[in-house]
Length: 421
Image 1 (tube, rainbow, N blue to C red):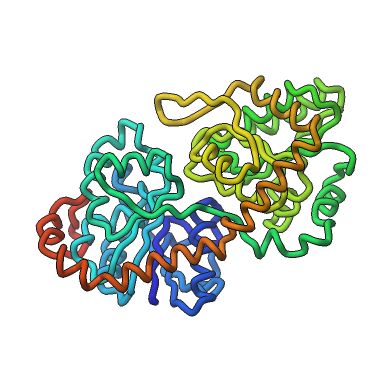
Image 2 (cartoon, rainbow, N blue to C red; image 1 turned 120 degrees about the vertical axis):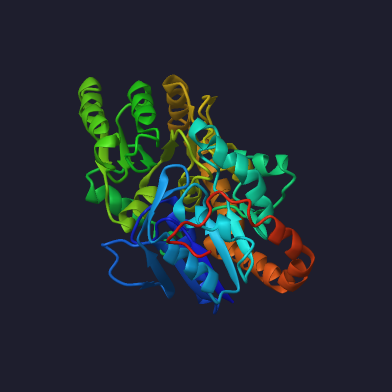
């Protein structure tokens, strides 16, 4: 198949959406498919072919609500003229998907939308956007949900629209490689001066201010766990993020604990991140908003038990895997979540003090990951969905073409002067 994936950012950019599309795309290439990723152009990207995936860059930014700028017309012409068998748009609320909506009745190939949580569903600024989304969803040939219970799935069902559940996962190439040597965690600890007999907590997420670093740091400060290291891995996000606050709080914790607790802020290469998972005794996740957090699957893949707030479908991941526990969580009116630091601290205390329980969670999570949540197995689910849509496209078009044409004027954004008409 000739497959087109669209996503706002892609390698070398780092993030959850980038990782999902990269992992699925490269595995489909490995199975003999031709995969193109249409995405934002980046100065730091030195080649337009990575891992066998062809990258088609566009100088476009924004979304329908914030405004769109750049090569919008060139992107839409690329979609209309493309000789693809199937297209998947990854995540709403960004230009690479929003610019597709006016074209849905005019493409020569089936289109799939991976909804990715609808993070703006409760944001008043997106009220009109999601009002029109009720019609847009029905014009896609297929929908992908990463959860059976999260807000995007519930929204679609309310409109009478179903789709395909395809979970997220973690890379067997990264986490299974060398798993029997047992030295990956030791390597990380030695590199960063963390003794083997000191419990290590880990959280991974950029310093955006939304990954719950302040909650994790406060819980770490409150927890009665003796000498312990907390490693926070994440890239800086500029002045708007939480890095400065984290940088100030880390030494405060060390001083107040008389040196028994140490919090470290790191932004290492990817291999070090994987090694950190293997080194950790417990993964702690306090994020305020997610869809289906990859870090929990990566914890499972590294045999690391986790404690998490109920962000995104974290509770569902626990039910699927048995690899961690969820603390009582408060959902705010804007759709974000939080928890009481003391509740998180109590669960950290309980798990750090119970090696047997940690081992049970770790083995359950690892077994579930290996059986269901490797990217190789998840790529198979994408492949099957694409193949089913391609094989049924002729039948679908013959029965739906009139309704699609009639609904073509219902779009979030009508083509402008730089766009195909």
